[in-house]
Amino acid sequence: MAKEREKEKKMFVGVSWNCAAELKFLITALLFVCSLVTVLQFLPPRFSLSSPDLRACIPDISTTAAVSNSTAAFSNSTAASNSSKTTADAAAVNLSPPPLPPPTTPSWPPPRQQDEVLQGGIIKRSFNTYGAASYNFVLMSAYRGGLNTFAVMGLSSKPLHVYGNPSYQCRWVPHNSTVPTSTAAGYKILPDWGYGRVYTVVVVNCTFPSPVGLDDLGGGTLLLLASTNGGGDGSSNTTDTIPALTEKPRTLNPNYFTSPPKYDYLYCGSCLYGGLSPQRIREWLAYHIRLFGERSHFVIHDAGGLHGEVMEVLKPWMEKGYVTVQDIKEQERFDGYYHNQFLIVNDCLHRYRFDAKWMFFFDVDEFVFVPRRNNIKAVMDSFSGYTQFTIEQMTMSNKLCLSDDVGVAHKKWGFEKLVYKDVKRGIRRDRKYAVQPRNVYATGVHMSQNVAGKTTHKTEGRIKYFHYHGTIADRREPCREFVNTTYLTSEDGIPYVQDTTMRRAAGNVKKFELRMIGPRLKGTRQ
Image 1 (cartoon, rainbow, N blue to C red):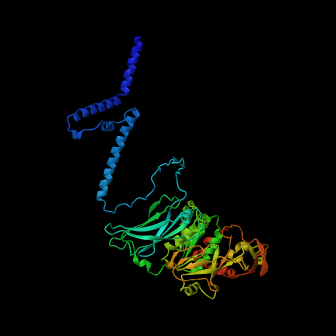
Image 2 (cartoon, rainbow, N blue to C red):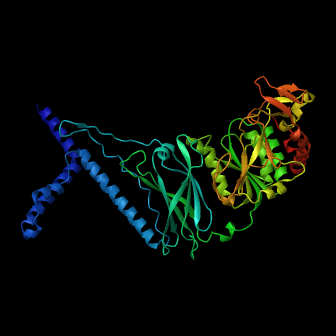
Image 3 (cartoon, rainbow, N blue to C red):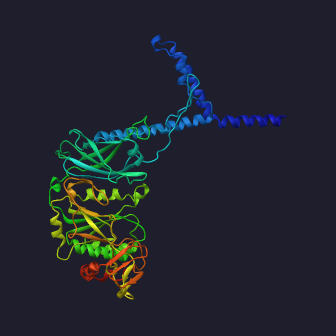
C-alpha cells in the first residue's frame, strides 16, 4: 500500500514538472486578469469595460497546443514586424518611383454560393467557379512604333474574343514621378483570321495623344490593362494590369524611327519543327543569301526543329552575321494555330520594323526567283509605290526527277533535281508576300490586311517562288521516280511539265557557298 502511494506521488510530481511552463503561464494570466478587475473598480465610469470586452481579451488556453501556437505566432509576428520596419526604412531613402500596382485578381478562395429556396417553393441553384479555361492574356512582346505609339503582341482566350467583348487600355507611367501618367485606348487586331484554337493572336496598338518618354529623365513603363468585360462570366469584369514594356532612363533614340534601315531585305521565318533535313536547309540558305545580297538578314524561329545537324548548317551563316535564331519552343504551352505561327510573324514584324526596307514572309521549302534579265533590287524598286505585294507560286513535284540523274541524284541538290512543275488549271494556289514594314500594323502568313498604303497582286513575270512541298521534313532521297519526258500526267491525275529554271541556277549557288564559307558543309546529309 505504501509503495502504491509512493508511486502515485512520483507520478503527480512528474506531471507537475512536465506542465510547469503551462501552469506558470496560466497562473500569470489569471493574476493579470484579477489585478485588472481590481484596478477598474477605481477608474471613472467612462473608462469602464464590459464583461464581453474582458472575455474578448482572455486568450484561448484550453489546450497545451494552443499555448505553444500562441508563443510561435508571437515570435513570427515580431520577426515580421522587424522585417517590415527594415523595408520601410529602405523605402525612406529610395528615390526611385513607387512600384507598379499589382494586377487585380479575384479573391481566393471565392465565396461559395449555396442553393436557396425562394418564395413559392422555387429552388434557386448555385454555380461555383474554380480555375480558368484559358488565360486572359499571354504576353510575348511589346515594341515602340514611334514616339507616341506602341504595339503589344500576345495570345488571348479565343472563346473570350468570339463570344465576349474584351477591351484594352494602355497607360504610360514615366520614370520621373513629376511627369503625369498618360492613358490611351488600345486598338486590338486579330490577325489570324479565326484560325486560333484555345488561344487566338492579339496585336494591341497603343497610340497616345502626344509623345511619351521624352522628358528630361526619360524612361517609363507601358502598362496594358486587359479587361474581360464579363466575357465567360457576365457577372464579373476582371481587369489584369500587365507591365508590357519598360524603358530605362535616357535610352530612347528618336532618330531610330526615321533613320535609313540597316537591311534592305529581312526574312521573317515561320515556326520550324519536326525532323528537318539539314541538306534542304543548307540549300535554301545559300540560295537566298546569294539572292538578297550583303544587306540582308534571316530570322529563324526554332519551335523544336533545329536539331544538332541543322544547327551545324546554320552556324557558318550566323558567324557571318546573316542569320539570327530565336528559340520559341516555350509557346508550345499555349494551344494556338500551327505552333502559334501568326504570333511569331507579328513579333518579327514589330521587332525589326525599323531595321529593314522590305520584309519577306515565306517558308523554307519555298524558293523566291527573279528572272535572269532582272535583279532583286530592280524588282523591289518597281514595287516602291506599294506597301505590300504578293508572290505567285510555282508548285513543284517532290518526287519526279530526270532519268539523266539516275545513279548521281544523291550528289545533286534538291532544287537541282526536282524539275517537274504542277500545271493543273482552275485551282487557287497560295501566295506569299513582302511588305514595307513601317507601314504595317499587323501581319499574317499569306498576306496582311492591316497596312497603310496599296497592295498589288500583279507580279507575274517579275517575281515568283518555287514550292517543294514535303521535302523539308523528309530526310530521304527525294527522287523516287525517274522520267524522261517534257510532259506527263501522274497517277492521281495531276499534269506536270518539265521546268529546269532552278536547275540552271544550282551551279552558281554552290560556287557562292564555297566562296563565302568554304567546304564546311560538304558532308551535310539529307
